[in-house]
Amino acid sequence: MAKSHTVYLCRECGSTHERYMGRCPDCGTFNSLSEYKVKEDKPGRSAPRLSGEQSEAVPIGEIEAREEDRVQSGLGEVDRVLGGGLVPGSGILLSGEPGIGKSTLLLQVAQSVTSEQGGNQRFLYVTGEESAAQVRLRADRIGVSGDQLWLLSECDLEAIEAQVKKTSPAVVGIDSIQTVRWDDLPAGAGGVVQVREVTARLISLARQEGFALLLVGHVTKDGTVAGPRTLEHMVDGVLQFEGERGNALRILRGLKNRFGSTEEVGIFEMRADGLHEIDNPSGLLLSDRSTASPGSATAAILEGTRPLLIEVQALVSPAAHGSPARKCSGIDAARLSMLAAVLEKRLGIPLGGCDIHANVVGGVKLRGTAGDLALAAALLSSFHDRPLPRDLVFAGEVGLLGEVRPVPGTRQRLEESARLGFNIACVAPGSLEDSGPKGMKVHEVPELAQLARRFVD
Image 1 (cartoon, one colour):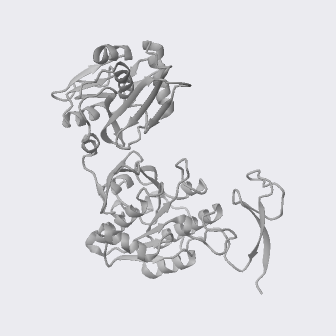
Image 2 (tube, rainbow, N blue to C red):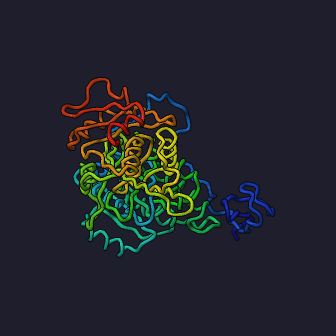
Image 3 (tube, rainbow, N blue to C red):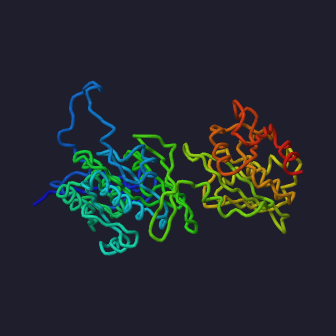
């Protein structure tokens, strides 16, 4: 008979201990340890050592690595974020909120991979959340098919590993990693221990067999990857798929990439037949913009190295009762409160007794400080009930003293604005080394008071 020994697993943090304790020494939770029997003749819980793994140190120049070995995903926006394609033996984690389109994106990547390079690359799509028939229905809806796209409905890790070795795919997609279980572990699927150890096993297999691994992962309420934070350190790249459910725009953002830059983003539009790459996202975001209205301003931002024009809206009204409201969508609430305080302190605008609502049109999230000047202009425009010029674009950071500071890539931002028909730009002094784009009038505004006098008062 197989020998076994007892271990105690913490239900909160997933740590294991050789003896029972009333309090888990790792997370400090009381009465969270549960007893499990572990057979000693089965593999351990650690990831196996790779066969043929180099055991001696060698000069780095003798190690062969070629950029052309990357597997092209076939989707330009995905390859842009990955830095040129999927690296064989790598593990990429794709995260996002439920219903945002992660499974659709993975299925379209599968279609594109199997169509590249003469259609001789195999993609193994492993689904643990849906049946094979459900995935086939989605594939038919978005027009995905192909002899090299193989589908496996399985949650058992050892069965998945057997199919990977049998089919020899170029890319393996797991949807999702939280559904895969390893029966040798004393924990349920989706737990901390299971997710960590299953990921380690799959990454080890990917490096051993030389295929690229795509893992779909759930996120928590605050937007972080569900499961242990160590999962993000184990993989070679973390891609975040984000957007608003009621809006068609989707953004693929690289949070970690060992083989390329994390500054690039991919932009898609969700339609009935799947995701479509967007060549002109600024035009899409500004297509529904109405005539000049109070509280509307256009900000020139950078998503990675790509310039993007977005519409920032603000509504300022006297507070009816109680504490004034500060509501925002796509804008950092702390940044909105700071700009309101600066306008009140430096310009004497009485925003302390007003409700303020701010929004970025199109579901885009305004990151960084490059949109400060546009948000401040929208607040001033709404408070005075005076519209800004429709062909005016803003790019600048606002400090606590009310000064306007330059932001990186101003020329790139203004060139994109001029291409879309904007004739006036408001920037910080020193943003441009020479004149602006041809046909565009550039106003350098050193402080918010001058912005108010020039465009609002």
